[in-house]
Length: 142
Image (cartoon, rainbow, N blue to C red; front, top):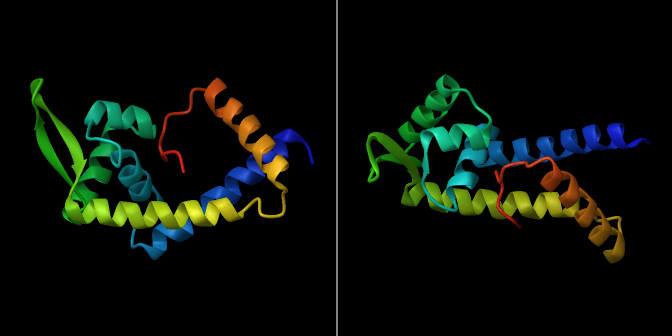
């Protein structure tokens, strides 16, 4: 299998695992991404849109729906009174931790047929691809 097919099929595999884990936690994949991003710290809306790769209207809808579910909240930005910062609620943090742990476990099992050296080489090579392409952190280091 060539590198293009392997990368594309790997993306589909990881996305399927991610989506299944999100569904089991009562989330959409995008809500799962949002919660994982917010695990590290609150984000402004512009910064959040850039990190998630979403247009303003799509991000607003995602934040609205997730806020209605009680998982995130908006707070005034202390540096800019016109802006808000989005952060996890207590319930959102608990759900994010469970979703993150389960998703890490499942994705970590995907290369189970590889030896330790092969897993390390895979991590090193994929890490280079991600860093070279400046992929934002939408899922913390697991």
